[in-house]
Every structure is written in structure tokens, then in C-alpha cells.
Image (cartoon, rainbow, N blue to C red; front, top):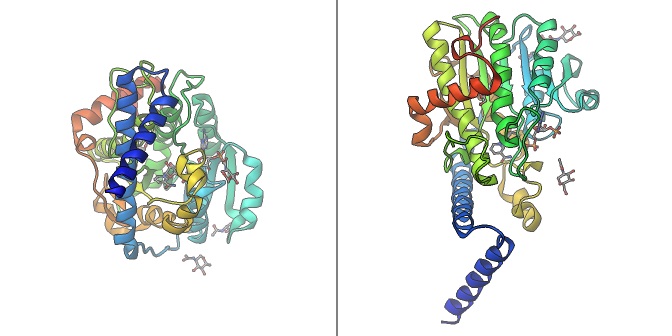
Length: 353
Ligand SMILES: NC(=O)c1ccc[n+]([C@@H]2O[C@H](COP(=O)([O-])OP(=O)(O)OC[C@H]3O[C@@H](n4cnc5c(N)ncnc54)[C@H](OP(=O)(O)O)[C@@H]3O)[C@@H](O)[C@H]2O)c1
Ligand SMILES: *[C@@H]1O[C@H](CO)[C@@H](O)[C@H](O)[C@H]1NC(C)=O
Ligand SMILES: *[C@@H]1O[C@H](CO)[C@@H](O)[C@H](O)[C@H]1NC(C)=O
Ligand SMILES: *[C@@H]1O[C@H](CO)[C@@H](O)[C@H](O)[C@H]1NC(C)=O
Ligand SMILES: *[C@@H]1O[C@H](CO)[C@@H](O)[C@H](O)[C@H]1NC(C)=O
């Protein structure tokens, strides 16, 4: 009895508090945001369970990939740092795109084969910067073997980039979409039929509750930061599938994969209630960045995957993805909108000129 009363008091207090901090919003927005938040927590718990059950599957053998070129977005911290460490260990030449390239020297000093790391400035919130970065890469290398679209942000206030794109969509999806377009000609040169080049998209189990707001992709009508993160991660998954299909149809030696790295203890969670209230729980229950990088290395190197382009990977096996993302019509609709946002005709995507 007293437990029931205590629970009722806690729930009522929480509901009142939630309403109070959102009181300037219409009720229907308060409720839909609450639903998205609960769904997102559900996806997170699902991800944690997936990690506990499947942690033993996280194994990868780094090959000797000397002479090959990898491009990675982000990586001065978090999972990306560990991704770079592994690619260098595999004897690759690694180029990273980061907002502050001056951090790269210190980074390389902590890594085996650190002398084979180069950094160029990249801000995914600016299409101009993406173009500049791609030009810098292509000036040095005509052929590329692996592109890891790793950089990302989660949540935050409503903001449009200089190109008029919602911030999370721009950083996680559109910036990478444009980069992929610009680097695909070099990836096609790097890949062979025996050993295709690979694009690895770091997406998230957070795509699960997501949908694409086709009528208002920048969410100008009503911005819900949780739904915007889910949309951006869903978009990366759908694009990996759709572009993989296009490349298969045109017979190009490039395969695309989407990877959920696990629930990983990084600064991505800064600003979330979780980080503020339970930082110890993150240390205890989340993967380390090094463990998070394993599925990404697996997507970069595992030989069996050559026959499985378009796969969604979690803990080094096929992960469960939402139905919306598998629908090719949805994928095509998103592809067309994304092309429009970067100003490229759909039939010219990934092609020279
Ligand atoms: N951690 C998790 O549990 C988890 C789960 C699923 C998926 N993921 C995905 O994993 C990827 C890596 O996340 P993380 O956990 O390693 O997060 P993180 O520690 O916050 O690292 C994010 C990286 O992205 C870079 N970045 C952010 N905005 C950028 C921009 N506009 N231009 C260029 N680079 C930018 C950051 O660079 P700066 O240092 O310049 O900010 C940083 O290197 C993300 O795509 C994330 O969505 C993470
Ligand atoms: C990288 O090259 C060195 C020198 O040839 C070699 O000893 C090493 O095994 C290679 N690394 C991997 C992961 O194969
Ligand atoms: C790394 O860079 C050095 C110096 O540029 C070069 O001599 C060496 O071959 C590179 N190592 C690999 C594994 O590519
Ligand atoms: C990876 O994600 C980006 C951003 O969503 C997308 O543009 C790209 O098409 C995806 N992957 C591949 C291989 O194309
Ligand atoms: C995230 O928070 C931690 C702990 O407060 C802090 O040390 C770190 O610098 C923050 N990182 C970012 C990118 O804001």
C-alpha cells in the first residue's frame, strides 16, 4: 500500500515537473515529446540489453592494409579516436576531418603508426567546408578504400545551419551525404571486384523510434530534439541501404554498411539528464569507446561482408532495424530530398562532374 502511494506521489511529481518546464508549449507538443522521449529511452534500454547479450561477439582481426587509404569524420575524441587507432594499426594511411585540425598532432603521438595520420579541417554543419575538405583529400589521393562517416551530435536546441538545414540533420546526415557524393568517384577507383571499397555509416539504435518528416524535414513546424536525432540516424541507415543498391545496380566496386556501435560512454551524452544524474552508471553499464569501435572495424574489414552490402550491424552481427528503414520507396524519397538539399541531381550522385 505504502509503495503504491509512494509511486503515485513520485509519478505525479514527475508529471507536474515535466508539465511545468514545458508549460509554454501546446499540450499536444508536450505529449508527443514525452512519447518520443519514452520511446528513445526504450531504444536505449534495448541497446543496452543487446550489448550485454552479444558482447562476446565483438571480435575483429585487423588485417595488414598497408598502402590503403581511409577517411574518417570526427575522431579527436570518443569512438572515432579508437576507430582511427585501429585503422592505423592495420597500417592504413588515415585522413581525418575534424573541426580543430591542430588537435591531430597530439592525437597521433598517442598512436601506433601515428606518423600516417593526416588531418584537414571539416565542419559538417557547412556544405562549403565539406567541399573544401573533400578537395583537400582528393588533392592528395585519387583512390580511397574506406570512408567512415563517424562524426555526430545528439540533441540540442533548434538551429539552422548557414545552408538552412536543421543542425542534427546537417551534422549527422546531410554533411555526410554530400561528403559521400564527393568522395564516391575516388572510392570507386579504390575498390576492386575482389576487394570492394567500403563506406561505413555510424548510425544508432536510436533510429528505431524515428521517422522521416518528409513534409518538413528541417522540423520548422515543431522542433522535437529527440525526434530530430532519431530522424538523422534513421536517414544514415536508409542512405547506406539505398546508395548500396544504386552502386550495385551500376556495378561499382563499393559496398555500404551501417553500424550501431553500442551504447558507449562518450561526451555525446553531455547535457543529457543521464550524464548529469548518473555519470557513474555510464561507466558501469556502457561500452568503452574501444569496445564501441570493434563493430566499426568489423564493417571495415570482415571478408564475409563483401557479399552483404547494405547490412545494418550491431555487435558484429546483423542488428534489428525498423521497418520504415527497409522500405525502398521511403529510401528513394529521402534520397531525392537529400540530393535537393545538396544541390545535386539524383542521377549524378556519386559521379564525377
Ligand atoms: N556513444 C553512443 O552511445 C553512441 C551510440 C550510437 C551511435 N553513436 C554514434 O557514434 C558516433 C560517434 O559518437 P561518439 O559517441 O564518439 O560522440 P563524441 O565523443 O561526442 O564524438 C563526436 C565526434 O563528432 C565530431 N563532430 C561533431 N560535430 C561535428 C561537426 N559539425 N563537424 C565535424 N565533426 C563534428 C566531434 O568533434 P568535436 O570534437 O569538434 O566536437 C567528435 O569528434 C556518432 O555518430 C554517434 O551518433 C554513439
Ligand atoms: C603492419 O606492418 C608491419 C610491418 O610490415 C607488420 O609487422 C604488421 O603485422 C602489420 N600490421 C597488421 C595488423 O597486420
Ligand atoms: C607511414 O608513413 C611513413 C612516412 O611517410 C611511410 O614511410 C610508411 O610506409 C607509412 N607506413 C605505412 C604502413 O603505410
Ligand atoms: C551514409 O550516410 C550518409 C548520411 O546519411 C549518406 O549520405 C550516405 O549515402 C550513407 N552511406 C552511403 C554508403 O552512401
Ligand atoms: C563533457 O563533459 C565532461 C564532464 O563534465 C567534460 O570533461 C568534457 O569536456 C565535456 N565534453 C564536451 C565535448 O563538451
